[in-house]
Image 1 (cartoon, rainbow, N blue to C red):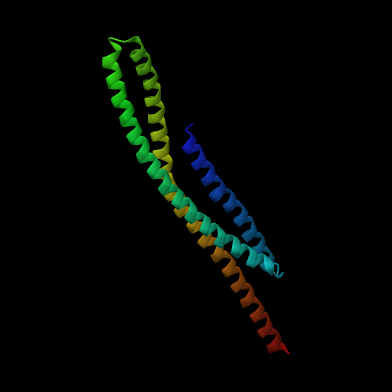
Image 2 (cartoon, rainbow, N blue to C red; image 1 turned 90 degrees about the horizontal axis):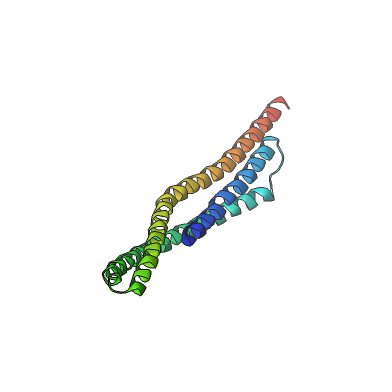
Length: 167
């Protein structure tokens, strides 16, 4: 696979998938602790900080996508140059065996450039939807913590109200 595409895939995997798993686990533990009437304390603060950090990293991935688009445009230009070189060496190959060898090597470069362009275009098209989904996941995670804290506060208040009514 193409080098640039591998780098982008690893970046997306690291920033989105791994962070998503980590945040989801933290949020699940916090919500469970809140439901069991345990104090989540520092865990909540830590989870919210991780969510904020993940949102910042999401911005970095979006910036990297813009860089990848610039690389994509450069590769399209390189492919055009390779195509022109291939045409000129084809003409020269009729008279010169060295030009024929260069033309043959150029065809390999053209195929490699085409594959790189195709793979890079595919990942560039996927990143916006992954980024959007990750952003929505972060919003849902924040919301789950807030809802759990609100439910615990409401439960505590109603319990206190019942105690006041009895006593």
